[in-house]
Length: 138
Length: 393
Image 1 (spheres, each protein chain N blue to C red):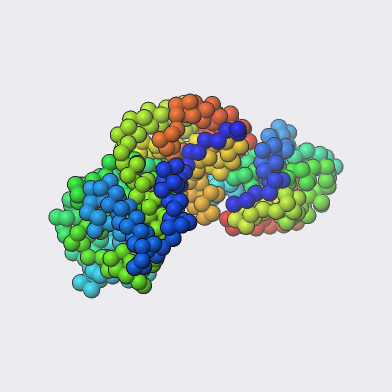
Image 2: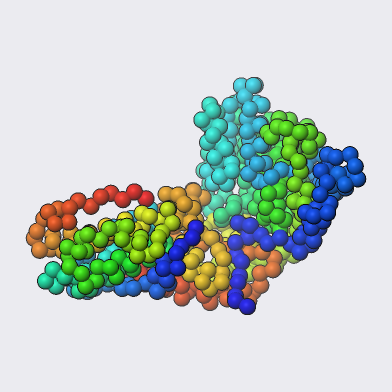
């Protein structure tokens, strides 16, 4: 299996690893059974994502997609973050092996899960803003 | 030169220098077809027979009991399928194997189930050992064949093959063993062992890929599996892989010479690796420590996922493997690790190091110096580790 240089670079030097103590939204997707867990922390100020951090248990692709997803949403508005697709993550990483495509979906879902949590904390129905989180096929 | 430590000998091995030299003529000038009448052909034929004799001697078998194949997978398929089809005629449609066999055996049995055979997959202990009594109890009037691996490819546990062979003999059931991982690591005396059929592979013993053997004990009927020309005394068709067979002969002759020395040298190094890794918190050894191949280490390092560990080891020049699903291309982690009762996340966290005779104590020290920092880095970014730590507080 071949990883692109970009994937390996993000795996070796992942951006935004860690937690945000006073996060405004935290989302966790995946499960230990399938071998991938992504936990994403967002700091949101006036509708903008001012900081994003992650913790991931998973393969090289899972770590690289987490890293890239946080990079892609940092400094963006919530609306823009909600539009982040797994395809955008794949493109930004110069591609992923076929068997690893689900990792990019996981990264997209982690962002959405964190934003759902953000709305829930605000007392708003996340379904109206984020929509339903799809089941991820591994 | 950049550091490179090959710790994946259970996957494949480096071709031996002597093996390589012995093969070269048959890849170039000595290209004759062993079935041809002229000298060039006869020379190839002679080379095959010399390799067969070396092989027979190395395993204490008769040369007539040794048939060259394309490798372990073909031998496993042949042994199990041809025996099953032969005995179906006599109303025997039951097969016994274990839950943690190599896929060459498991998937063959699954295929036979689709064809109407019933298969009992005998469980193994949490130490990765097969119980002779469990095998004995599974045998019925309908049992055609029992197939139990000699040593497990992932966790290196060594099974009581001689005892199982004795039970099968008493119950008049054909017994096959996949001995691919055992060869070169455990002394094998086929006459003494009493198995009916056995599979071996070349590329695990410093011979090339694409060559192996099946041992068919004298008197055991095994209908042909590959049909065609009259090669291998009309038992296995197809123009022989002459260079590969020559390589196999040299490799097996070399490797069986030094088994006691190899065990004596590698066992303490292996234990050093195991003990060293187990000093890290939340780690475990997978499979029995005592009934274990001298070069096999298989541990779970909880909180981190196997593939990312392998990638980081690779960056440090260490080639290893894992039973994580991510490295197998399937949904589930290793069936072998699950068969020991490991939960999925612990199976995903496994690391296998399989060392060969040239691995030194200094090499082990290097591996042990590299692993803790990698583990720390990966655990730091793992939500699973965070949970483990808070749970154990």
